Amino acid sequence: MDPAATRIATTKMSTWKSLSGGNDDKPVTVPRIRGAKGEQPLVMITAYDATFARMLDEAGADILLVGDSLGMVVQGNDDTLSVTVDDMIYHCRAVARGAKRAHVVGDMPFLSYQVTPEEALRNAGRIIAEGHAQSVKLEGGRTVAPVIERMVGAGIPVMAHVGLTPQSVHAMGGFRVQGKSEQDAQRILDDAKAVQDAGAYALVLEGIPGPLADRITEALEIPTIGIGAGVGCDGQVLVCYDLLGLTADLHPKFVKRYDQLFDRGVAAARAYCEEVRARTFPGPEHTFGLTKRPRAVG
Ligand code: KIV
Image (cartoon, rainbow, N blue to C red; front, side, top):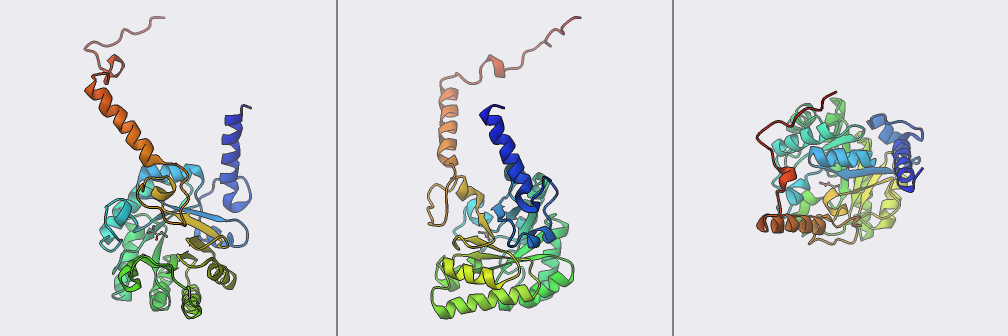
């Protein structure tokens, strides 16, 4: 086998083994995600449309998060606060169409779950029924525990999110690392336990010191998925635009860029601009003729 083919075959094998330990491409479900704790690292990546979903699913991501980060990377806002439930449904539908194996999680936007548990349940239900997400994610600890209980009771699996919670950007005074003092660390640990007790099946830990993430991961029975939370979580999540190098002007410490797609996109589009101006594109090979090509005989 040539080296490229071996590389592809190995990649496929590791994709299939990523949760079950066996060779299968079975859909990733909530019980499989829970069962991964202590067994296999969970891989979550954000996705916002069908093409990216197809690409990231093919790469072997276990979970595709339709994050409200779309308010920043897709819509161009400075924060996530203006994303609506209708926006989420639109993007979840697209991602669900592109995903084959990966579990699709729909983020609950700001104020879609904080007003009343009834409204929260209705909005989560729309993200599942109309957006075709398989579970929802929401930010917060003890204060959202009753909402999580309500959703889980209605059959909606919930991924929770504590630490740096971007929907509280104004209360936090910016996107700042949380849990640095012992008192704040204890608050986040208590929040983590509260959302687990309320029935969350997994927990995102964002923007907290590594040792605190380790402490929470050890204390919980549900998997933790870290972003800017060190090496000890049960899984990791990155925003797809960050990991692919599409967010050219942002360089947070916790992001590793696996490519520079922004720069490569500029170069490719620049080549197109130049060829159109030089009249070297389109060429005859891109041009339709008036007559049909004669059929081969025989
Ligand atoms: O919205 C989002 O993309 C997120 C991840 C960063 C966890 O919540």
